[in-house]
Length: 201
Image 1 (tube, rainbow, N blue to C red):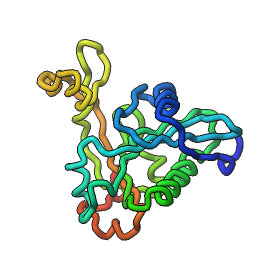
Image 2 (tube, rainbow, N blue to C red):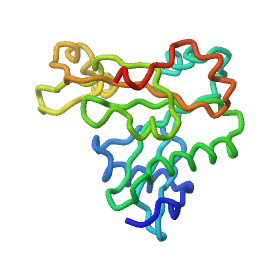
Image 3 (cartoon, helix red, strand yellow):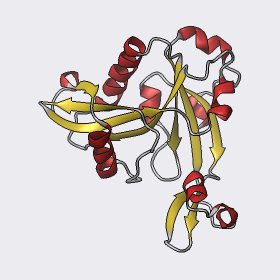
């Protein structure tokens, strides 16, 4: 397993990042508009990837923090780590990623991410990495496609021209949680929604 302090995080190509995500992420799927892929290395072996990009619905996300420019926030849309990476490696990798973004893209003010409590987990890694919890809602975005028997996300249903029937399918039981990390500490003062205690989970 090794020591988490030995982890190195650095940019990798979209091709390599997407390959890792497809093989390691529980969904097996990538987010098409991801623009930044950070590989997680240990002993010159890449065992993880964090992909970032604009939110699919920036018009809904931007108002969460007042006075946010259209290009001043990112979404951490995929987080995938191999089992052989060391304990606490995820939170250390996220800390590296946030420092990299602050240095490389100094205009970025905050990062948003979502935990899929219906299929994966409730965001333990985010809580350990300094994110705040800003939303918990019952799942409506993942439903079972009766033609495949597999979960399908609402945006994927839209792209497959299945939006009309999507809302008639059975929902996956569970919740989706929204987390925010403040690259610029002053952005926290402009948050337009409450910060929820983790005990709400």
